[in-house]
Length: 189
Image (cartoon, rainbow, N blue to C red):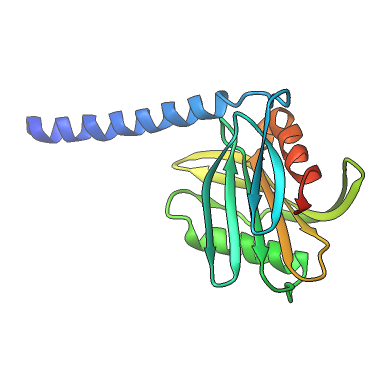
């Protein structure tokens, strides 16, 4: 016969799992359509860009000649801006593959498959950029989610500049205009 303590422990484990599931479901459901009526400018290492006012920079750092920042929507969308002080000696495809492999290694929660990586071409307010689109499955606990990450490299003679956008596929229609705003407004100061 199991003791009361064991039953409480089992109950707590189940409660914690249910709370985690509830949080994830509520986060996925709370993504808002991007509101471009209010914007703010942000600058990093000689470059600036606009972001929707309700999105926020959640991390910004400079290490060994690399500046980077992460921008988060109110839901689950993320934009990563990476600026190398020297011209990048690697291609956009190499950057995308490294990012995919590195994400798999650094992730301490959940897992992801490699997915597919295909070339894309997009226009952002007259700026035409080649990029790569990675569609993959992210699994947290036992709940899979279709994710989309896009990688872009900005032409610059002196520096390597990469912008990466990430979002659950079912939220793309809500956040894509925010991604477009950041990329189309990205300029050297």
